[in-house]
Length: 84
Image (tube, rainbow, N blue to C red; front, side, top):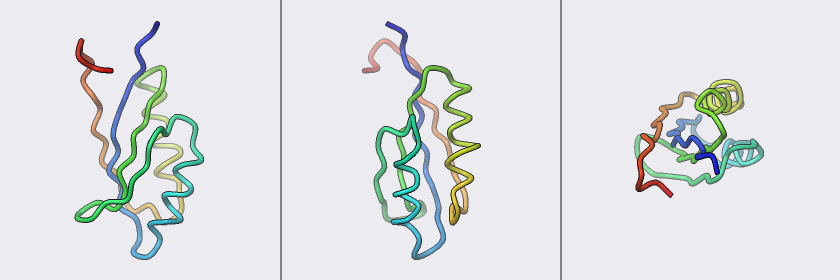
């Protein structure tokens, strides 16, 4: 079985639009989890796909394209034997 690429994305949205942004993010294939957060970032997203380039495409072409997304910070997971 091929290991999937994984990244976590921290999303800032316009004030008052967090729920609609979360709803739109949940519609994206490859998004496995979405949670609202307090602090510097508004939304925490888990993205998983077959390749690193597909993860990058999901983030740059889909998540960042959502209306009211202000910025994203991507945390790619380093593959290792303890991942699962």
